[in-house]
Amino acid sequence: MIAALQGIDDLDLNDGKPLVQRGRLGATDRAEFGATGTVTVYSYSSIPSRGGGTYVVLQFEESEMYFAAKRDRPRVLCVEEPGEFDPEDAEDIKTTTDRRVFLMKPKAGSKDVVFASCVASQQKPGKEKKARAITFLKSKRVPARFKRQGEGRALESQLFRLETVTPEDDSLAHAPEEEQCDELPAFEVQHND
Image (cartoon, rainbow, N blue to C red; front, top):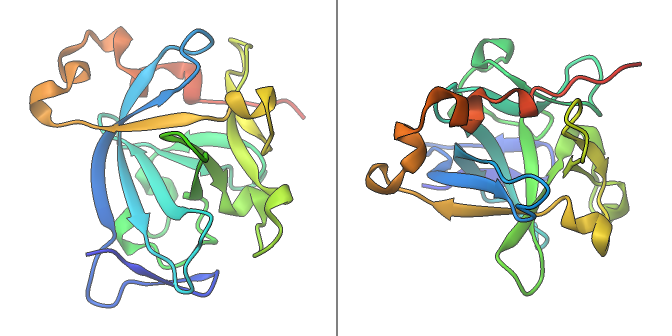
């Protein structure tokens, strides 16, 4: 069952749980960042309906770490252990003010999506230009961060594609440890003041 979202701030799970899907997440610009990772996507429907997207939480399957806005610097992208959050489980999230909640927005005419952080964006209805999306950079030191949602070439570095995977076709489950993306330091983004 898909959980319901009341207004912009409150998740109302009623007697249900969010829709959970297991998938492979990869940057669509594979020349710049060719890695993929197996993630669990928790999605929530919204009331009133978010015509521009779906609220989601992203969790790496192997390490169980979540994508999130950093607690003390919400415009910084990080990955954190479940124990860093209250509640720990994505199924128990009841508000879009949780640092793990993103608005997944489709790119018109494609299967690509953009993930905008609800906390980093401080997003309000009708204020889409403030959206801060996960953005890949060319830097190996800081490979990803939140940046304002772009257009044209700037948008290309913010596009992701989700592909549903099953245990039988999940080649990452049997990949050597150094090839498993949830173990790569690429998503452990640190920023200097």
